[in-house]
Image (tube, rainbow, N blue to C red; front, side, top):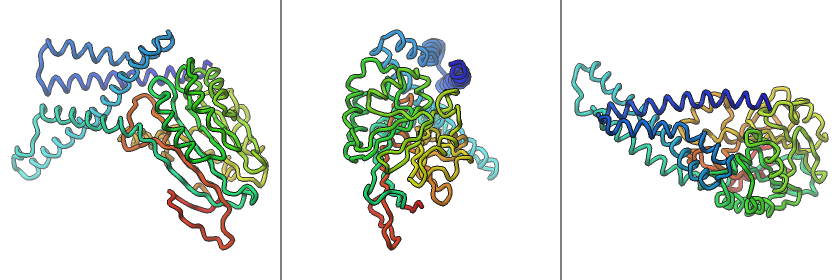
Amino acid sequence: MRPILCIMGFFLTVFFFIYSLLHFYLFMRAKTALGFGPAVAIPLALFLAVMITTPIAIHLLENAGFGLLARVTAYVGYTWLALLFLLFCTLLVTDVYRLSVHLAGLATGRRLSWLTLSPRSCFLLSLASAAAIGFYGWFEAGAVRVETIEIATSKIPVHAGPLRIVQISDVHLGLTVSGNRLKRIMHLVREAHPDILVSTGDLVDGSMDDQKETVELLQAVTPRYGKFAITGNHEFYAGLGQALAFTNRAGFRVLRGEAVTVGDVINIVGVDDPSGPGYGSSITGEKAVLSSASKGKFTLFLKHRPVVDAESAGLFDLQLSGHVHAGQIFPFRLITRLFYPFIAGLYHLRPGSALYVSRGSGTWGPPIRVLAPPEVTVIELFRPPVDGNICQKNVKRSFLVG
């Protein structure tokens, strides 16, 4: 547990430092733009100070058993986090605009006063824009899409026919994602009629006590070849024991550094997220786990983070990952891409292998998504026609794997 606590401690220190700076920046910009006095400044400062500590309050309330209060606080606090980020971004846009007008005036030797916006106008425009984007993002977060890809492979036995794998990822069941959101996700899963259902981490993100309805929604889907899951970083943060217990009750087999052959049709290999060093695959390494899979069969590799280990090249056919949420709230995607170049969608790694990165089925933290809609992924594996022609059928992509 000590490595996990060290990682979380470092993350929380950096997070609260940046979060506090953003609040200070907002306060100073508002004061400069609106010119208010102590009668407004003091209540505003107190409000911002409370919002800085909201993530801590959420954690304490949940651990103390105040479920409803923790849920309300989470919705308010995490929504504020998203709006603050959006406001910061829109303020930067207005700053760039004002600087551009100023530089254009210097370059032309003219006063472009008709293009100039006052600090007050910029702040109010940014505030309105952030609120509008946040309102849109709340709807986008609930609009789960189905993404479908087809993969032609000679490694699927003839008798198995087309094999349909459905992937959910990063559901983050907890305070802000619960039964109603999961109902929409599982409705799409049932409509896809999966042969295999996989969860590629972060299914759980909070206390799973008193989650009878949630468990039943997951239990209701019974694919013919079963359900498989792996750990994500939030399973470790939420408490590995209760997260695994919940996932097992939901009917998933959790693969923790393990390779299984399902129905003599397909290999499924799953590894732990590295947030839990000393667990599962981190003991032997993913190369050893992949090497233990049955030879000659299509190998599906479940790995939470969209990172491709060079030593694993050629040992799997398709890696399914999640974790990055496609940035969740644009333009945070631009920052996420610096750390994870494989951020969303299908990537060809080398002849005969590929990586698919899900945008995630739920939300982490803020119940908001902007230009990164949640998804349920349907992967259709089928044998290629004898003539080698692959027919496109209203799918996202179709390609040939050996």
